[in-house]
Each structure stands twice: as C-alpha cells, then as structure tokens.
Length: 131
Image 1 (cartoon, rainbow, N blue to C red):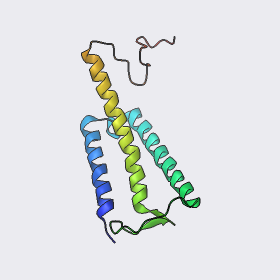
Image 2 (image 1 turned 60 degrees about the vertical axis):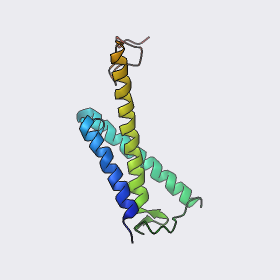
Image 3 (image 1 turned 90 degrees about the vertical axis):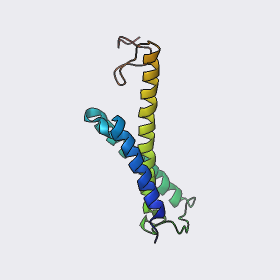
Image 4 (image 1 turned 135 degrees about the vertical axis):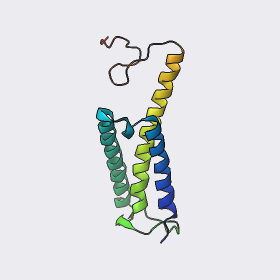
C-alpha cells in the first residue's frame, strides 16, 4: 500500500484551495455563489463517477497495478484515488473558470469598458435589459 498518488492529489487540491481562499474565487466566495459552486462541484463529481462506472461496466476501464496507489477500492475496479481525482478535476475547473472570468473582467476594466456583473448581465448588455 502506497499513499504516493493519493498524497499528490490531495496536495494539488490543497493548492487549489489556497488559490480559492486567497482570491475568494469559488467556495471561499461565500453566500449564494459558494452554494452554487458546491452544487456544480457535486454535479461534476457525480457526472465523472457515472462516466467511470459506465466505462467499468462496459469493460473499457480496469484498475491498473500501480505501486503508487493505496489499493483501496470503493467498488470493483473503482479505486479511492479516482474519487479524489474527479473531485479535484471538478474543483480545478471551477477555480480556473473563476480566474479566467476575473482576468477578463480586469482586462476589460483596464480598457475602460463597462464590465457587466457576473450573474446579472450578459456580455455586451450594459443596462441589464434584454434585447
């Protein structure tokens, strides 16, 4: 039993959490935004786990014999590390999306363009009215 891969995944997730906390991007944003992020995270994890289970059932996926893994399985051919990986992947996606949105908003602000509110207005819709 080795904790190498699991430790690497958890360390990477800790790095994402540090970015999230530092810049208040996703879960650290608080309020309604954090609740929405938790729902999106849960849906992402559920989607990828269902994808994995379908691949396992169809015979397209089998657990390899890596010495870097714990050997703990949540289901036949579904290692613990896969759950941690899909959770990290979903969280990474949310953090990257928030970073990109913030960067685009900052760039638009530097150019003097009006920056629409993230949830309330579509790009190019400055007064919030529908076209």
